[in-house]
Figure (cartoon, rainbow, N blue to C red):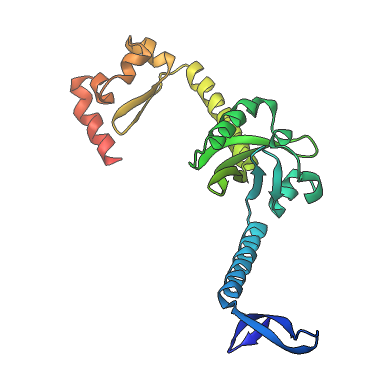
Length: 238
């Protein structure tokens, strides 16, 4: 390749011989390859940008082929999984999924092979090299080659901390629910002038079932009409 007028060209040279095999000259064919060079440079820059994005992403990024064999994993995926690149390449996605997730995986795989181009969002879990389960939130998209399904690109976020907070919140709510259900006073809660909770004690005290109280359009319906204006006034001032 030679620079030509600020661009690039490809030169091929063929010798020319006379009938007695004496070299008498040569034929030069010059082809402008600026478009090819520009395309190659654009591809190189695009690949470099993609590499930087994937390597610096906080999410796990994994690509798999049509057989669900892992073909790429970024740095975050390697750190969370505990595998090296050499170890993870060639693993099947089922190798890092709990058995409880196989049915979901097979369903999504079938849709991908059928050409479904929708981006899927779901929660699942990965098993790291140490055998620990890591809850993740996943988005996955179809990869194609020659307009045919060739695999999937998976982006996954570790949601261990969120799951721990949700678990603590659930245990706290269960503890609170047990307390208010067994307390010796009646408790009724409203939100936006709708009854949203009534414990067993208030139901027995008022003679309503829990569902009947929840069906009331307003908690003020169960207040005696002589006291209703005063209670409503106090509520508005709050």
